Image (cartoon, rainbow, N blue to C red; front, side, top):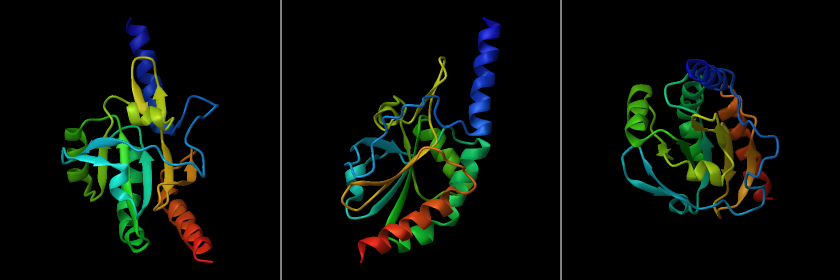
Length: 183
């Protein structure tokens, strides 16, 4: 039993440290051009937040494995650093992971995050977006991002996210998509 727990712990730490995003090759994530599945989850403020609440705005819906881990902290800091640029582009940042509201609230407070983090404690939204890492003894949200337009349509899907570069990558795509939409 100890061996199984040690192996599971090593797999979990490896997934978090090295950014393993999904243990499946055949993704069933919502495809570009399809409507983003709606959902409602509680935020770090213990208030329900639904995807449809953001109708009329671009949404950066990002899934991440765990609060307070190195890659997740870097990714969140970069989104926070760039938040004003997203707001200028009529975009909101919404993070989702399997930790509860209390964990998200502590993470936001400690790291100075001013965007919504949603608690997917039952893994339902992570599964709906095919963004789950199943480690046998635990499930985590995979590091995936969906860029959703103001009409609720998925415009870009990221299944291979590098936390240190990701916000800049999403901003560039948002700029390009908004530029092509205005032509």
